[in-house]
Amino acid sequence: MGQLRRLLDWLEQNWVVPSYNGWVLGAVCLAYFGAATNTMAGWLYALSGIGFALLGLAAFLTRRSLQQLTVTRSAIAPVSAGDQIEVNLQIHNPTAQTKSLLLLRDLIPASFGTPPSQAVEQIPPHKFHPWTYYLTTQKRGVYWWHEVQLASGNPLGLFWGRRSCSAKAKAVVYPTVIPLSHCPLVDAAGDSENWQIRSDRFYQAASEGITKALRPYRIGDPTRLIHWRTSARYGELKVRELEVFTGSQTIIIALDNALTWRIEDFEQAVTTAASLYFYAARQQLEAQLWMADTGLLHGSQLVLETLAATNYGAKLNHHLPDAPLIWLTANPQSLEQLPQGSRWLLWGETGRSGQFPGLMIDQQRPLQLQLQQSIFKAA
Image (cartoon, helix red, strand yellow):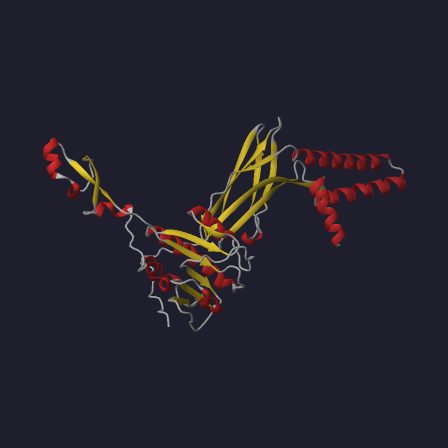
């Protein structure tokens, strides 16, 4: 039975197979032909011949109805987990004949469930038929589309044919980014006692410093920076440009993806890494992401795409940076090997350890509340 099913699938994909009506008509034609052989009645030969001719014509027309159709797929925009993916397809009929009574089926990734389908009444000559559908994403990842199947029983419904058209596309589902109003874990890492950071973003609030130049006043300049004596001398407002010493501190979020995790813990750790990265970026800190197989990464889109595709058990291609970092792990022993000044987040343990402050994550509590709570102090 399995071999017969595979044979029928191959015939349907590469040629045509009879439908139920086709099998019935074929059986009737064979019966007529057998009766004609026994009775030598010409009208029975005629009936069987007409039936076989009808079957041959139906098979030929069904096969032709699927020829020369092409499918193109638009690029799929990235979304975050929980949002909907929009998939856009165009089926083109480049022939001079109308293509009718088609069934379209898109072979989506298995994790999205049953492949969607659409019945098409007709596609006029040299025209396109648009097809748009939506899929709700459940989890992060990189998903691939490969082909669309076109099927038809046109015109008589006696045979059924199917063709596959290549229509490749990639959909990136980003991990969820939790909106954090504050995060002591990042804030503490950003307030290093050994750093005196003054940045360009503080220029509007500056009122002291070495004056490096004077320039004409522009709308929006703080009035406290106006050099009144020089303005009175030249008859126009002059503004001081201060020599502000700038610097930056890098916040490294390190995800221990070389470790073997529980699936739910790792998914939460990926969400945490994305949330901490973008919180640090909003605080105008120079955020970077480190993982065992990729090393240091920077840039919002690159970080999101990498986190969407990552999995635990990765190969250790890069060693931890020798700099303070925020370590996301399920291995408590690794907390003793962190660089000086580091912080940590630990999954799957009921106790805490390590010489640095950190936070133990509880799966039973909302992640957002835990990331916004005070961190444990080092013992």
